[in-house]
Image 1 (spheres, rainbow, N blue to C red):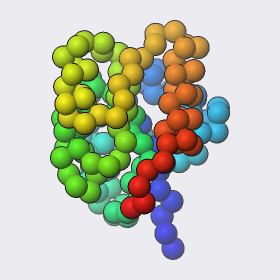
Image 2 (cartoon, rainbow, N blue to C red):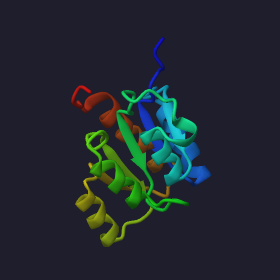
Image 3 (cartoon, rainbow, N blue to C red):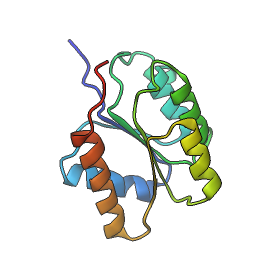
Image 4 (tube, rainbow, N blue to C red):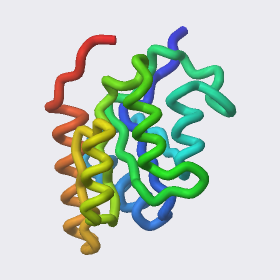
Length: 147
């Protein structure tokens, strides 16, 4: 029997942003298999199958990772660096979804190999519309290589 894989890994520590993102993804039926990580260490455990996720099947990587930058324990840039430096995970699309519009964060994210960088809108409707558009593109339209 095979484990159902998460289509999306959502890495977000802000409970309000997390709730809005989950609402938008589920409202538009974009993913019924969303894995949530509330900090960078939990995200790394999930991706690299350590800690609580050591029994996760190795071939079941998410189709996309939505990653906040300002995270407790391990920040988003370090998570991104680890993902993109490992041959087993570097092909997973990573979308930074953050409140930071600082040029240094944008430059460093692209230097590390991010696929897209989105600044979170502060307005409820704009935020849910942004997440909906991201979900449509990355979960339904974007084609990734076979694993």
